[in-house]
Length: 425
Image (cartoon, rainbow, N blue to C red; front, side):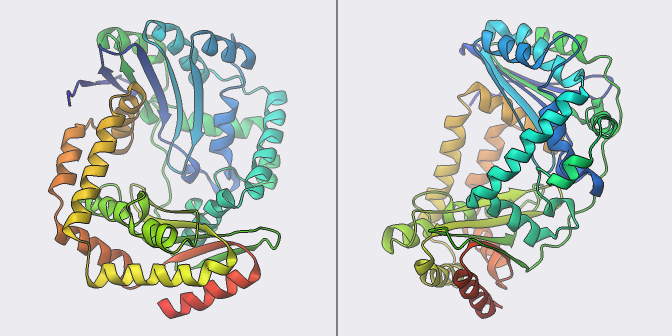
């Protein structure tokens, strides 16, 4: 795969990655701040997410409607999201529209008005978002498993959206204070991929961002050790029980991360995985089951998510115990490992044909590692991971069987889960 990323650093700390893909018709642009919900003070719970919303509400020269019309008038769309350790804004458009697209994106990133009236409106929008999450057990479960794993006193254990009470407490000065701390040169990453002239892109970015204050990275509390805790929310009228299990994994800097990724794929990331084959295909216990790898600078997890009829929960838990035990005792097979390697490398290679994926790759490399990494190197590390390394990752993950859990469903399901937890101790 050709590797054509270039790195540019502005004097104020802004990092820019450009990826020239001359055979493409599009350009993808991403802007990140290296600040998310884990960078909030306790009284700021939900602030990073609110600030993300407010950046779309207007600048001194553009209303929220004008931002939308200008973006969509370029044949583009824009999206933003907030997670624990960063906030991002992404857009994709025809390549010849780059300068116009970046003019809008840089404007909303650098110069949001934070109008008090808009602030009150957006608080109500987020109230509705919080209510929507509570009505969707699979999403609510994500908040519950975070709380169980990290504890509600730590930012990693609190919901990204905040609460109705914290939202109502925020005033414009509070929002501006967080914005100025977070949206500074030292925290900003920009990535542009597509049919572009890298030097032209660098000149445009330099002109737009040259006056941004350098600022400083926002400190955050170190991740605590994951807790073997449990959270339960009773939902008697739900036809399904929603379950999450969270096991301690590795940080994004740990050399064992490649083995842990392969293990997660073998466990439950695709249709060939052990969890999917046994729980869905062989036993028909559920429609959906999956595992996910979560990695931060200072912590990591492997999580299992499952939705099924309450009557199938006991058998599903027994299957999970058996699969974990077999991974500890017997490890993975050579065929499983080779198939998982091919899956990861193949999916990554196919994805990186897309300008948006190239933009994400380069931007997240700068955000997480402060350097550009060749995808071929990551693929090589996956390919060279040995059976012994993956089996060691399995023992590290499941032996002892220590985990946090969360459940949304009837009380009978919770009682079953608690009894099962005792057998795992």
